[in-house]
Image (cartoon, rainbow, N blue to C red; front, side, top):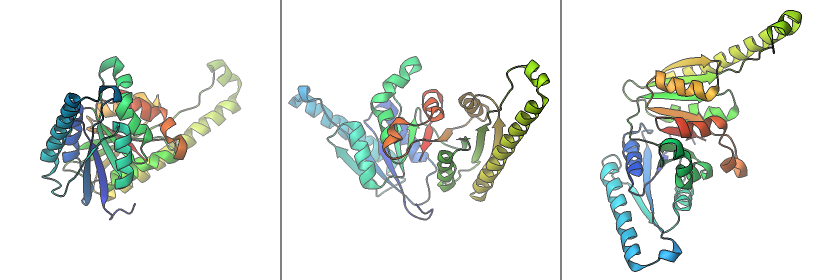
Length: 290
């Protein structure tokens, strides 16, 4: 989508605390200047429990969720769209995202502690895996000023930078771009001493990888600075996910942005190990960019 076209956001809510945090985060997120928002509330009772008292409760719950979203979001978007759908949550949100032509879906994260990944799977992870657009997963309400972008020098990582480029930098807006370079090592010191030529080749390969990563980071920094962000880089040589979590902590980030692997029919099966790990481990909202 061209940068000057309308940006479209779906905010999914069921009225839960997690969903309310997502709504509040969406209200204060630095979206592009021309942004349209649609709220989706899904209400669907299991077939075996279709009784009038339950349906009444579901209707009331949907109304409460919609009213909360309307109160929070209308000051920013007076022309806010509101849709209440009688479908399963994942289906309802993904269908509306397709109809609306959404650029981003905002959804709350369910689950806590060691079991949060399993609990999150029913709705939030289903939306992340099935979406054709980017998804912002919110664990707790957050105003975004400091952003970490994880890059791995692969084609699927570039949407992360492209998406942040479209955002409006907030006051004191800062981006840290992180790339973990995997360095090749010889199996032992003895081998290194016995095979000087091999050791030299390994060193040359590592230098090339580091230089390439540095070049990509600098190119991304230049793009973000041109959009008004205070951008900086962090080049590491450790385990990518651990280094990324370390950067989030060190920079006191409010948002982590990573690219998703997978396209077309395999998108829902392949987020990539870093994206999957980020969803489970990040203490701040995660924006999965596509």
